[in-house]
Amino acid sequence: MARNAPNRRLKEMLLEANWTAGELAHAINSEGRAQSLDLRYDRTSVAHWLRGSRPRPPVPQLAAAVLTRRLRRPVLPEDTALAEDGVETGDGARATETDRGDDPLTRLISLPRADVLPTTRSALTRAIYTPPSVQPLLWPTAHTRPPVPPFGTVRPGDPVVRGMEEMAALFARQLDHHGGGHARSALAAYLTDDAVGLLARPVNEERRRDLLTRIAELSHLLAKMTTDTGRHALAQSYLLAALGLAHQARDRRTYAITLRALSLQALERGHPHVAADLADAALRTAPRDISGATHAFLLTQRALTHAHGRRQNEALTDLMDAERHHVQGTESRGPFATYPTAGFHYRRGEILLALNELSQALRAFDGSMRHRRSHGHRQTALTQARRAETLLRLGHLDAACNAWNNFLQHYPLLRSARADSALASLQAGLRPHVRHPHTAHVLATAQALSDTSARPAPSSTRASAHGEARRPARGPDRLAEDGRLVVATESVTGTATGTAI
Figure (tube, rainbow, N blue to C red):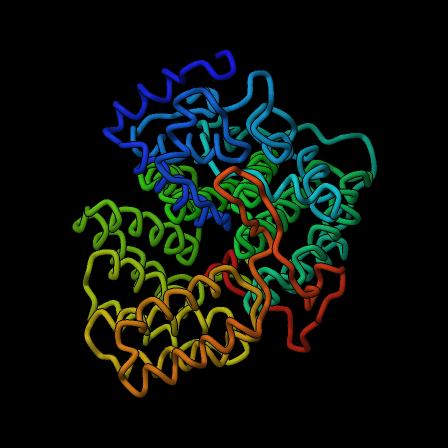
């Protein structure tokens, strides 16, 4: 489309979506806030676009994302004619591309390397999340054995593999205790400098698959930490790399767990149909001999997608099956090996909350709290936030304030976009009750923490209605964005499956 020519494609899409120019602007602003962008477009901005002007990246990607949801069909940035002719919608789009058929290991070499360098990290943070398209893959039959390369082997119980498992447990614990903003860059550096290089060692095919699985788990863990800093597109890239590595390792279990993570991300980003397909694919892909804990882990996610899709019977059926498998299930130690009771009850509460079963959801969150460890600040804070929101919906204002007070005790110890979002929910939910003395005290404490923390989400940027982006001032990262790492003194065993709350 020639510059300044009327944008007929965008006009046709607005008509198809039954949206006004103002409604499109509002949807783009909302999508921007969900991805840590402060956008302030209005109907006048969209009118300029309809006359032929083009907004700066990442607005074309945001417009495509909201139109995809509204029209329930894929919409690319170029379909809207908002992207410049022959110009990418942003360096971040190139930096996080994962669906062009390139090798997942090559991808995993380049992604963390760009992530740890300030000069290239900004391109990654500008990328906009779009729902993934995961195609069914062929798996070798149980009787197919790969040829063994004619070079040395690594002994069973190799300390290299064991060391990778210990590092995964260490970073998983760091996420659980202090949020994704702590030690995230350290894990990216470890993947770049150490883990991926281990595949250059002479090993037989069996040990190579072991290494691929461990690297896939580390990439999955880095994705979870990245999500907790608000970098959703980059997190998806790490998950898709983990998915490819799991397939190369012929590890259906790790592949299924990663599909579950992609499903949860799609659901949280407002794509329930994609989330449902991914959750179902996770259960279909999982091996028949998976443990009860893993089976329960996969079932709870499908139940959650059913609940958000208003399919109550299917959601409750999956939830009951998950509870049965969880009670029966036991697995070996490790951050991707167990499904702790606290995590199971939290997800059960989320499912019941989506079904509007508030009293039952509250009991589930209470059950989760009974099994929480005091040093798991992120998990405890987010569970208390959910309890508070549920109590407020039930009309129990004093009890909700008590739960929010508990949340606020843990909040200063966290670098977590989810915790920041919970703090914003606290303020929005309690503001109508500000005349209540208990509420006023909680709001004052929350405001004081907001004023003194000075730590916006790492990926946050602000933009004017003309698309000029500027990064707010922020204090130095308190841990590990500069490469430092706090090592907890407890044992490295017994961390949660996937480290998800």
